[in-house]
Structures are given as C-alpha cells and as structure tokens.
Length: 333
Ligand code: ATP
Image 1 (spheres, protein in one colour):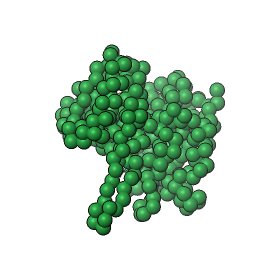
Image 2 (cartoon, rainbow, N blue to C red):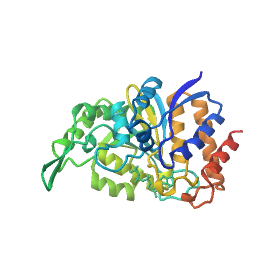
Image 3 (cartoon, rainbow, N blue to C red):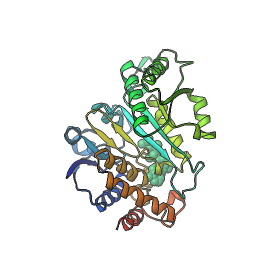
C-alpha cells in the first residue's frame, strides 16, 4: 500500500536531517508519496504566515506528517509555530521515548523510559497580558478534559507497550487547584488500569530523582511546561538532544518530530545528528502499520551504533549527516 504523508523540512538543520531521513525511509522499501509543505520562518516570507492554511489542510487530509523543527520568528505577534500546529490539529499527546543507544557514551546506558507530555494547555495556552505597566499575568490553564485524556493515553500506551508503571509529575503541593486537578484526573484514570502501577512525584524532586536514579521510572506523565523541560533533561541522560525522538498524537492526526529545535548554530554545515528525527520516522512507520520497514530501519541504525565507526560530531565523531544516513542505508542492503 502506498501512503501519502506530509513532509515539513522546517528551518535550520531541518532540511538536512529530513533529507537524510527520507532517503533512509525509502531504502527500507516502504512506498510513500511525500507532500512537501513549508512552515515556520520560511513560510512567513512566502505566505505571510508561519502556519499556512495549506500545511494544516495537508496534514488534516493525510493524517500523518514527518516534521523538521520550525522556528518562530522573534518579535511581537508571533506565537510559537509548533504550539500553534499542535493546537490547530489537537495533537494532545506528546510521546517522547528516552532510550539509551548501544555504544553511545551516556550517563545511563540501560535507560528506557517514556515522557508523556500534555500538549495543548498549561502556560502554553499563551494567555498573557499586561495588567498595569510593570505587571504581567500569564494564565495556566488546566482542564479536566485534557488532563483525563493524557492520562488515558499514558495508561493505554503502558498497557499496549508492556510498560509496568506510570508516574505523574506535578507541583500540586503549591498549585493546589491546577496541578491538583491534573493529579486527581491521573489517579481517577489509574483506577481503570489496576495492572499498571501508578504513583506521583513533585516535579522538583522528580528532576533530582531523574538525574540520580532514573531507572525507577517507566512512563512519566505531566503537563505541558514540565514536559518540555523534563524531555530535554531526559535527552541529556541518554547522550544529548540529537538522539531523542517524539510523536504528537491526536484523534485525527499525528506528527512525528525530534525533541530538539532548529539548532541555528550548526545549520547549513551538514553536521547535525539525524538520529532523533530518524527514530521519530521509525515511530511514524509503526503508526502507519509498516512494522517490517520500521524494524528494519531501527535495527540498521542500532547496528551502525554498535559498530561505533560512523558518529556525528555531537557524539565525538567526524561523520556528516549524510555519512550517517549512508551507513544506515548500507546496513539495509
Ligand atoms: P527550541 O527553542 O526550538 O526547542 P533550543 O533553543 O532548545 O530550540 P536546539 O535547536 O534544540 O535549541 O539546540 C540546542 C543545542 O543542541 C544547540 O547547541 C544545537 O546545536 C544542539 N543540537 C540540537 N539538535 C541537534 C542535532 N540534531 N545534532 C547535533 N546537535 C544538535
């Protein structure tokens, strides 16, 4: 079966890592017609909008997108493109598997957990205003609906993926109403999944525990802002931002993207690590039920890591983005 998938190269290192990924996906033999769309800073020049209607329409129609990082132009009036896309498509669950890779030096070589981030509300609702000059107010929105739905997704994911435990991370001791509601919804959903252990940790302690003894965690569930921060922290535990993949899942569509941003400091040099976006593509292949291609691609990547000869600069090697893709493609042959 041929799939049609929206492809968003994005900004900064986006086009480089996306090109390497598309080549690798195609080498698995899966048949995909790509519908390329631009968004972010580039789209502003062409369409006068960072999130053109054509991009939203394409993903709505195809239901799946592979997405490079998009940059939000600095300045007044520009709300985050990535947040905007997640809101427009109601991609409520951000799933970020954190798994150490073979032979990649990192603090916790055995680590295997999943960060589950609520994607549509909290302080990312973007509701800020000036009360009086010198005083601004930023509203944290937490709803029963969104908190319940992320908890449902997390527990169901645990069940489907043979995970044993879900931990809610929060600050309900201080934000008694907002984080309190999030936590209450988490435990209410947990009752329906007695086979999955449920517990919770206050976010500051949780961060220390993640750094010191992360193996105690399996699936960690939290609201938007904590999830953003904890994802980068967890990427650091397995060797850096170049390695952590992600998926944004909604009822009607899903987009697959790396945890990292557009890395303008290394853009255009062909040296970015494409691992995170390639692993996001593996998640995408599983999502469209191309299990064989997904496993082939993942296994080929793991072999390249095991060999340890082709490594990008962030991992202490000298390989380019294209070298890494070529090495994976060689393993697929
Ligand atoms: P955003 O605000 O869009 O999330 P950010 O400010 O967190 O972006 P990133 O673009 O993610 O920043 O980059 C953070 C650092 O990690 C930079 O030094 C960048 O070069 C490095 N980095 C990010 N992605 C990669 C990658 N794929 N390969 C190598 N280095 C990367």
